[in-house]
Length: 195
Image 1 (spheres, rainbow, N blue to C red):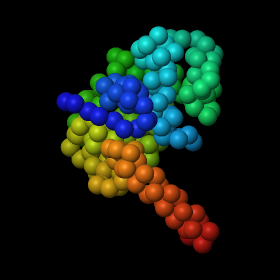
Image 2 (cartoon, one colour; image 1 turned 90 degrees about the vertical axis):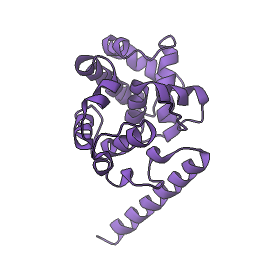
Image 3 (cartoon, one colour; image 1 turned 180 degrees about the vertical axis):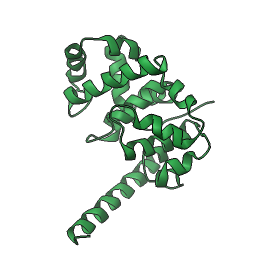
Image 4 (tube, rainbow, N blue to C red; image 1 turned 90 degrees about the horizontal axis):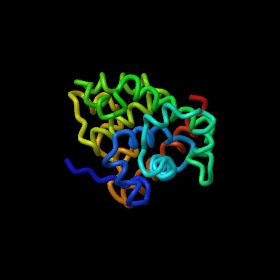
């Protein structure tokens, strides 16, 4: 099934995310405390630095300091290249040890959305919100739709422009940004009011 992604502003990086389950998962892992485009461009940067292929087996077996150095080389894959590089390597080790080196095996193992979310929560760097967003991303953009996936994704499974799962164009990217800005403002207002 053909998939198209619009997450990085770079055609090659977006193609990698559309075709490589590991790239999409690593991009989601990196999606915190940096612009979304930078996070999801990270897998393509890693692939280029690894000789043209995002090889999770190679990442998993590399010396950690060597891999962190690879992640830190300008432009660094993340604002915090050391901690996120270590997290990416730990994720790759789990993929190799438990999923035969392919995140698509993890996605296919879940017969329900609840199971998929549980499998994601067991991964390094995936908390409740990130797991929900990724379930929505898999369902909406990758057509991974086990029974109950929308419920498992919570509000992110709804139609609208709430997260990276809803980005299908430059326009929808701006709509997601506006939604996030509004949600942050509402959270700050609620915190300021003491609720």
